[in-house]
Length: 177
Image 1 (cartoon, rainbow, N blue to C red):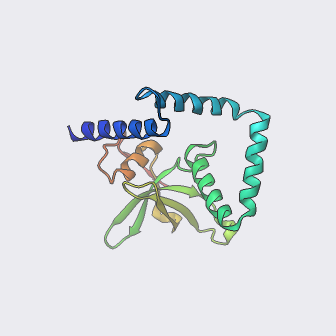
Image 2: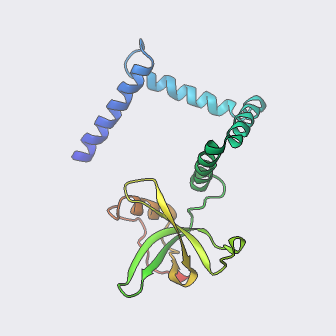
Image 3: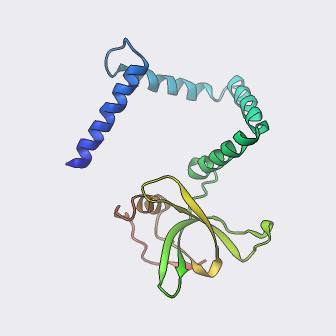
């Protein structure tokens, strides 16, 4: 019952907030106006004028030292999550401590770190529970087990929920990678 009440409360709060952004409209109509606006922006985003404008803004951002770091990191993360080169597509189980048999779930983001002169390590991203931040660890390949039967979306939900979400496909078989 609590999740339903909390979800309804969150939706009502967001709609009220949006209604306050566009005063004078029928209650709830602001959501429709905003969705139509987002759709139109999406349609026009493919136009040459819009792409040129975005390119100009991006060039300005890349010339600004502090903004460049923040923007490029957010852009890489967004492309990694939703873009064509989805970086979070290989869930893995990493052995962190052999003595205590301590493991952690994460995602391989780079298989080859030869470019930074550490060819024996792979980069593994560990999202935080109940948060969309995380940590990047560089770990020996032999400590990483690729979870073939654990879909990336289920792995992300499982990790972000702190292990509470029941994965659709439990990791049954795995192999070293």
